[in-house]
Length: 168
Image (cartoon, rainbow, N blue to C red):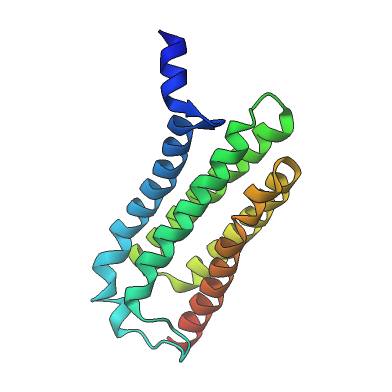
């Protein structure tokens, strides 16, 4: 029975169950964040003074869906290599921490409407993303490289977050 199960879901070295779980966990984190974001977009956020480099509102959802997908694939690569080593366990724990920090940023910025606190929080998030990339790089370079668009976007988001705080 176990052999048939593994044969169906593990082809060409790809464990489709792990891949699906990794992607879904990241997308769920994004969905939770959007719970706080969506209502604020047409309300509180719409009334804020924003810098000239603020992207259009419609861009955020596809950008984040893509980033969460890349994060899920990155996590899968590390998880699929095994969690036997201390280094792999630390990498996955740091990944989980940054995912929680990411989700809570939406609550802080949009839900609590606290741009200054959100800016401090996003700096912690950037540190956690950098640590994730560092540890993932030691396990799998492709896994680390998949997180580069994420850290670039969050860096931009930090600048945007600070500018919104400053302008308001």
